[in-house]
Image (cartoon, rainbow, N blue to C red; front, side, top):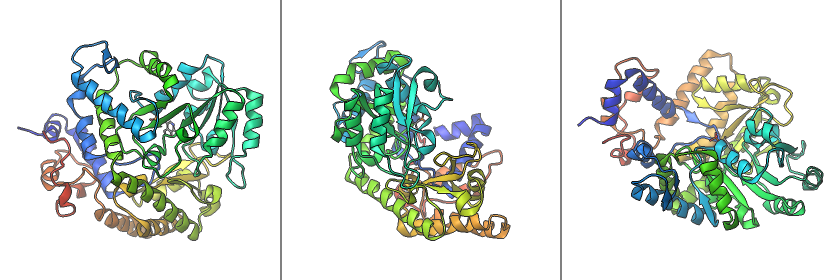
Length: 457
Ligand SMILES: Cc1ncc(COP(=O)(O)O)c(C=O)c1O
């Protein structure tokens, strides 16, 4: 019987070639985008499974279609594991991703024109926290708080004053490019003062909270916490809305039927798997290592001459001001590092005067590299390579050598789920792919993963 991969290779060599090319890119390069990670081989199994065939509108025990005995089981597992990990009373695991998850909360708890107090985009907030280009920015009013330009801290007296002026219905904290941690008790105090809901979008650090490495907003009595499942949690792409019991009905109605129809049950099954993994002691160790690696990378970058926004990091990510440090904008820096197989993303810095596609910085993070098993010395090495590449970006020989060194490092740290010689050999594509080094024999690199081949029947 042919494997799923063999069938795809025969049926659609173009898509297959792109798939193999992407596998090669992920395997031979270092992923430093802080919102990305490598999911578990077991999650590839559920993602590409028959759960994708099933419509399951509704919730476990009350669905609109028959045949739900197994979908009910996986969704219940995901819900119970989420409640245990985040110490919360209710969990909805159906949002299709992070943006629909936040939209569902706004639509479920606000009326059009109501106000949300949220972090400014260039200071670290996310698009879904009210950027004018987002649909939510058109439906609701967003008042924005910023960080102190010198310290990078949040001035809670100013946030309180802003809240009293704007009278928000939701006080929202959460970020996608703020290299700090929050004092959730302060946000709760402000929300109480204006009788607003306290909501945290912990999409970036959901895994770090689940693993006990960062603070949990529920410990300070937050009403609602949202998180994506595919970043530090290492799950499939998806979102979760976690809440106090008193908000359960509104949350569930906001997701279905409010915002979406059939949940992606293959993703829900994958979320159950990832949350099961997050309950293991190994995951707690992983989350601590993510933070340690971020410290090591930030310190080494600073030593090599990088200007970091807020001066460092207290989470898994950091933002480098590349204009200040190297005289190049974030777009050029992203391309330069791409040429040595290090993937980062261009990033706005607070109150950036440059446009989003040519901003002043880049954003880096450690969840994916930590998943591969990299530690302090690897972070220090990466910092040196990053700075060398940016300092000597027009020297093609330096670029070539650095690229080779990055690739050599990657050989020592296999990507989970991308190993197995028979898999690699049988995958020989029938059209050209960007990098045929993927066809090497990986069993010798990590025998433990030999039998966990992706997509095998
Ligand atoms: C804080 C935060 N919220 C929401 C999202 C949106 O998630 P998605 O891209 O899955 O829609 C992101 C994505 O980066 C994020 O960082």
